[in-house]
Length: 172
Image 1: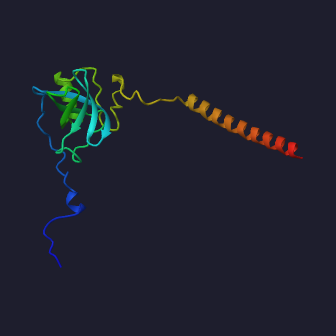
Image 2: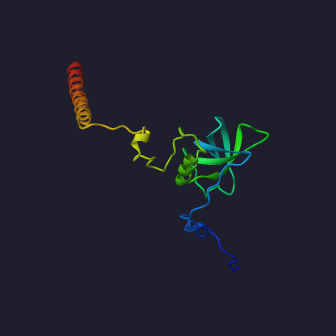
Image 3: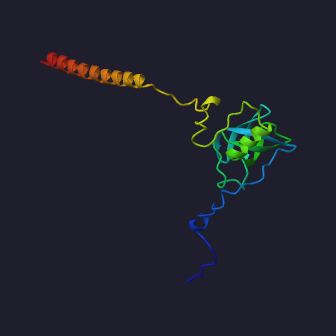
């Protein structure tokens, strides 16, 4: 029987992100780099991002970040521009939400940039226009909705009874 010569399987992949809370030094852009905000994920290690210079670019997530750093729509990233392809770039770094806020405070990001702060999306800051994707209903609106739903169900029930009685009369 062969001897086990090392770690294998899925168990070696588990439990690696224990030191995720560490603060890291804020990385600013250099020549040939640009800040961008992810518009949508395309799959296959690619995403579409709007760079701060106003250009929409197809970004490739490099292998070091692949399956280790999860990028979602709305995240702020640092991309390396390509000299030979202006419409493509390579993702160098993903900024955490607190780092993105610092970049905005330092003036590196424009003031009109909306930062995505996780699932909540900054709902506590209602004065900044955060949470525009959510609809708020008053109690009266909810009552009206329930009334119309019940009214519609009652009409459907009466209509079904009328149609079935009409069909029964027609067949007899």
